Length: 258
Image (tube, rainbow, N blue to C red; front, top):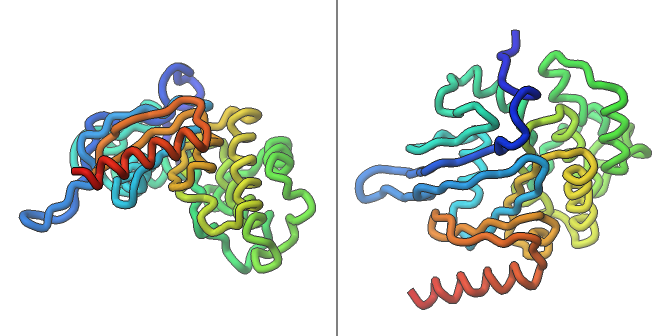
């Protein structure tokens, strides 16, 4: 029987995800590397947050720790009211399946399945049936109605990523983590996928956290948080591409000066 995690009864004011003093290190002794250094950040429900920073700043590590894909060294990572470090492997797997959606740069679709079968796969693996009305809503939101019978090889990169977005949304997760979701796409396809993520927040009330290096992509978010050397160093509300780029250039200039 699936584990019962707090969900609909949780007050809406509680963040969808939260890190407190989150530290992640790799290696020991002289080879020890601190990827995250006491990061504290909250991701509000029904909002779109972008995570940015120079290469090696810890942004992907933060996402992996917050999504329960990588254990933290110290500190706290929570999805809703659940502390991830308190869960054994089985319960952690259940929480990821029931509460977290993922969109990766590489799409991660099964080549032998149709678009619809790929969308439905996580629910079927969990032994759950999709709600017909919600499935129709998700498919309409990402604009895939005419491509459901096609296999990934018959779809463009942008269409494949839309399948991945629909798959992430279908289970009504507490939060969707997207790791460079436009990294393998041309600018037009990337803009479409970002529009769909934006629409899922505005129309479906989804919570999205997206790791990106692209100021244009980040400008689709409600808020941008910036990491440098494993620390949270700044944030920007209602970002524009120019404002994000200015912040990134300022961080790089400080890095060269130090």
